[in-house]
Image 1 (spheres, rainbow, N blue to C red):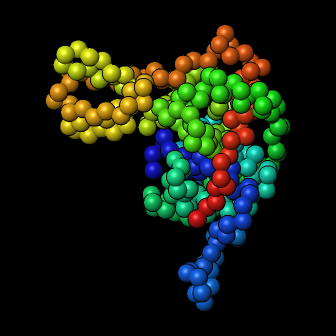
Image 2 (image 1 turned 135 degrees about the vertical axis):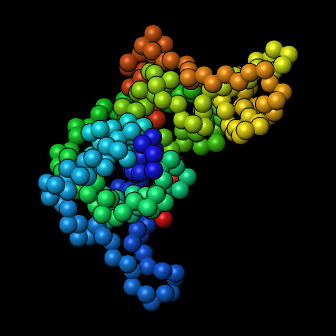
Image 3 (image 1 turned 120 degrees about the vertical axis):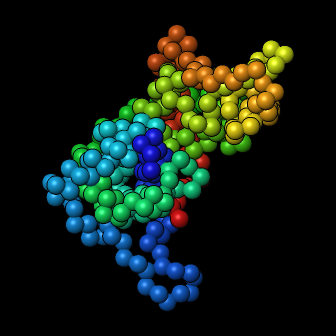
Length: 279
């Protein structure tokens, strides 16, 4: 498990809703009793030493996406999720199993002991005893118009829009409000690996700028700004420039007022796509 990938995942907001069972038994019709969920009787709840250990584990494994105070960054606001009523059992299963189709890996893939997960939950319960104040939602209808005018050429929602930027169909379940604001105002602060900017320079001097889709020792595949995916053998290139600047423009207050930003974020926060349940 790497520090850059949170084991609490980007789709954890879905824990609050849905009816999918997290502590199921075996195959349909099996008479085997379901395995007990370790979080049902968490021995670390309220234990100061366990909470300190859970804090250290959380900061190493989770804070990059969810923030040091668990109020959200690239990943959801975990304090708000717990305040909304998610159970420890559901939280434990989500951490352990991950969420397919998102950036959330399964802790079991990294041989993370269940006891470590229980200590992190004890820490989160400790810091989540006070629910955060709700943020203003903004004018969602106006936010939708702003999105159509300024964002849809690069971003897709429900199958409509551009493809050079991330699909935002479920962005409201994957990003906190604070993260959305940061990514709109300062898009180069963090760039997801599938959307890293690259410029390839051919031997005749042609420059193609776009997002890197695939790369190995011998070749590189790029989606250019016209959304054409092109592959190049590195032996046929003069240079490959890895750019730390996002293709997404900076939407500073001169380009997008604070009021319009509030409305746009309100619209994006409403995009939750289909229900995300843990399997």
